[in-house]
Length: 251
Image 1 (spheres, rainbow, N blue to C red):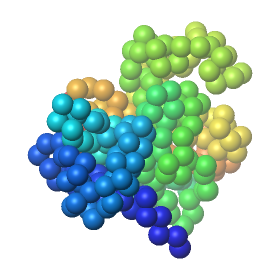
Image 2: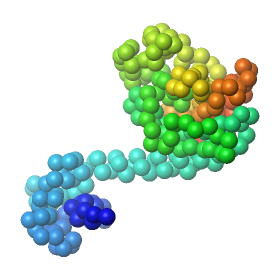
Image 3: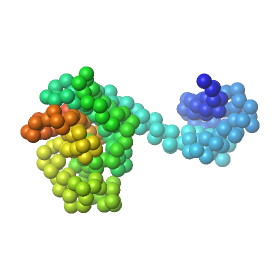
Image 4: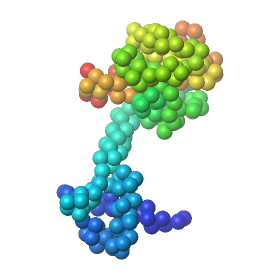
């Protein structure tokens, strides 16, 4: 395996700067890390160009950028969410009346990003694996979080009608009506729109500010579900989302 010394040096620079109370001069960075001064200057310039460092010209020093801090906070938030939600995801799979796969998703712009998953021996295979992103408007987990927002916020996230979900949600009015139904029920659904063989239900969990922090969903084979089976599954997701809301300090 290649050692990739430049990548290793970049990570060491970030680690060094993270331990300091303020910006650090390039000569100090080179000395502390045992780098040739010319190589250290080139590396710092590249890291600045890529948005990971900022240069303080009056001090002749360098520090981590806001981008680094944002990455760290997002990773920490996602890890916290996953740890809080995983027992709930596992419980959903155990107690669901049909073989199901459970999911934890977060909004990422107009998409959902899957951040957690629960599965058992009989769980169906799904595309919604951790790290996968799908348009929020097409998924139950995304619809649950959109329903937790106001219509103006939804329009800001999905400003163009061409980004709607096709035949069943071909118009803005159809989307608004669907989200209103999800709000009344307390959970959202998707019936064969991502994959014709599968359906999903989901409910949103809120943070302390009342905003949708994540959603918890169940995906199952449509052939396994009786016509009156949607509501019990939706209620299970809503209960799990309410528990995650409580764990997040939400109201």
